[in-house]
Length: 184
Image 1 (cartoon, rainbow, N blue to C red):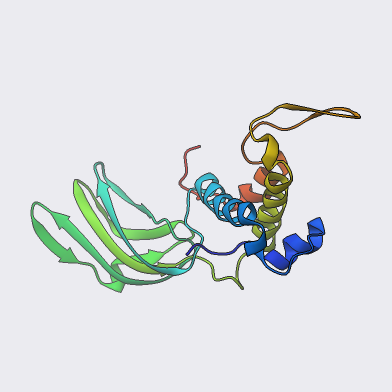
Image 2 (cartoon, one colour):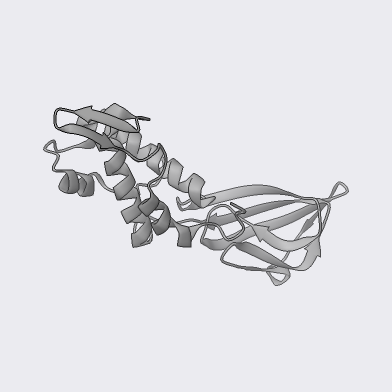
């Protein structure tokens, strides 16, 4: 189950749908889930709150360890595996940051295994992310019959549609929430 960024009630109110449930609009359910995936990909992070185990290969020397599910709520364990030996780090060896964790002593040429809780619950998702999901979901639902088309002819003329992908306004709303260690 992926996190619900926008409720059916909000979509229904915005678009003026008449049916009581999203199951009456099968394509809308697919679009709603795919928008979550598209937003997570754009942000380079997982949004849904949960328990995560992440394995990270460190080649060079670093103290900065990026985690996928932000914000990080708590760290259960951090294990460094180097030359076949496991070393468990204590809470005095690192601290939680807005991008993951920072290690007081840099590591290199090792594998880190980090168990942690992170992400957003439905009630803690920032309003800008909810708005971005609403706009993208509605746009994709209303243009689902013309996926990939840049121009659609109608009886009254033609309509230009944005290229396939996240809308410019959606990206603008999401930019402040991109993972701080994302390169693109």
